[in-house]
Structures are given as C-alpha cells and as structure tokens.
Image: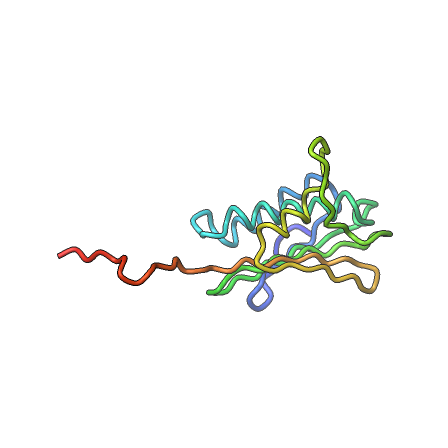
Length: 146
C-alpha cells in the first residue's frame, strides 16, 4: 500500500480506508499529471471528492482499503476510486445550502465530461473522465502579425 504501481498506461495506488489517505490520492493525481497540466486542478478536486466518499461512506473505512487508478492519454484523464462497497447506492442528490457535505457527486456532474458508478461483487467504483478540448476560434478572428 505504499508505492503506486505503473500498470500499462495507468498508475494504481491501494490505500488504507483512513481520512488522511485522501491526501495521498490527491498527490498521486497531481504527480501523475504535473501541476502545469490543464486538467490538474479539476482532477485533483474530483479525486478528493470521490476518495473522501470511499472513506466516509463505504466499508473501506472499517479497516479496509480503497484503490485509486489514474489513466492519462493525449485526449484526457480518467480517474477511478474503487472501495469495499456500501449498504446504499451513492446518491448524486443536491445538498442543502447549510449542509457540510453531500456535494461530491454533484461536483462530478458539474465538472466531469463523463462519470459513472459501478456496483458489483461487493464494491463500488466511481470514475470520471476529463477531456482536453482545444480552444475554438471563430473564422476570421485570427490576427496575423506581420
């Protein structure tokens, strides 16, 4: 559980289901992408949210583990967190304005290009994808220096 493993085109890190391990999940994403990557901040934020959910809402918190997987390509980034399952399906419900939690999955909904939840064989896997999108310019708006 100490060092991330490189498996093909992805980094995989297995962590204890403890709150302080969420920071290690964020550091894995940050180190994999590098701070200058255009998707860095959103990926780190969303990883923090889904790793926190694994620690707070799943059986991983009862002495178990969760696994973070980061896959990078020229078109984007995919991050997944697999935990040891929960009694209830994770909910993307809207939190009240005075709630101290409940914003993780709505943040995924707002920031990720795609995201999903897979529940099978006693585990939850929450994943998201962020895509690099080139800036679009309208025709005729490009100035040429001469």
